[in-house]
Length: 134
Image (cartoon, rainbow, N blue to C red; front, side):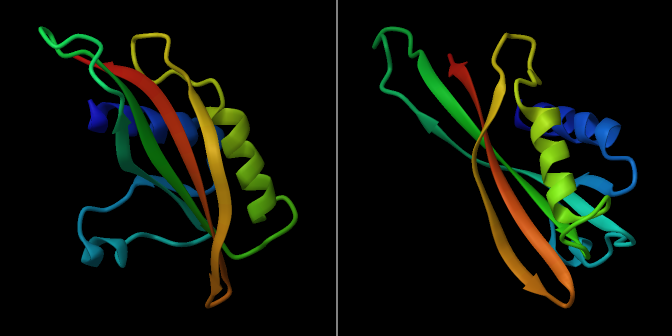
C-alpha cells in the first residue's frame, strides 16, 4: 500500500510540475547523488504512520494516519521558478487528493525551510492521509 500511494503522489505532482524532476526518494544515498538536478527536484517519501487503539479485540481494526514527506530543492526563492511558487503548486495539487480507492484525502500538516546550502533552497512539507488498518 505504501508504494502504491507514494507512486500516486509522484504521478499527481508530475502532472502539475513539469519543469522539475519529481521522484520517490531514492532507496540508497548513492542513488541520491545520481539524481538529475537541472532546475530542481521534488522528492516524495513515506515518513511513517500513527495508529489508534484497536476498536475491537476480536478482529483488530485501527485508524491509521500515514505521513508523506515532500521535499523541494530549487535554486531560486521567488519568481516563476522559485520555491514559493512550487510550494503553492504542491499545496494546490495535493490538498484533497485521494491516492487510494477509498475516500481518504491528503492534507498538509507542516511546511518549513530545511536549509539553504550551495545556492539551493530546500523546503519540506509533511502531508497526512487517514485510512484503516484491518
